[in-house]
Image (cartoon, rainbow, N blue to C red; front, side):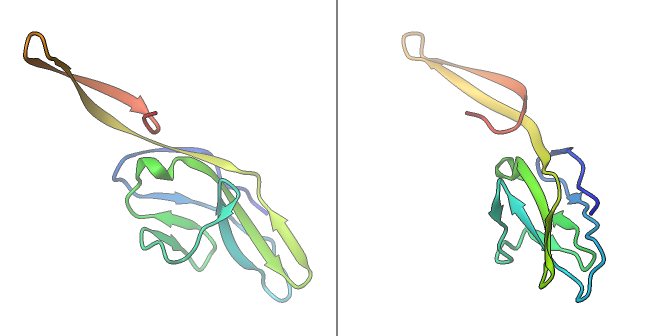
Length: 115
């Protein structure tokens, strides 16, 4: 099994996590884990290609996680090594100084989700 590679992507951009499952008879079913939890096909922003790759249409901060590819058939199950996807973007935040009745705006280039 070929494991996905760690990647970084800007918020709103598309990203593809590649996985090449091992050959098997019958061919294995491929699915993905996000932080060790199975990704359900109900998420419209995530597509599993026929080759087994994971496509995220518009990356969000919440997509920052470890992703693992799993291939399974009646003969067994194999998991790839996890690969970290980091989603980054520019964030604006403001501080309100009540005494001076002023708002100060700041821009920060931050990796990943804000705390």
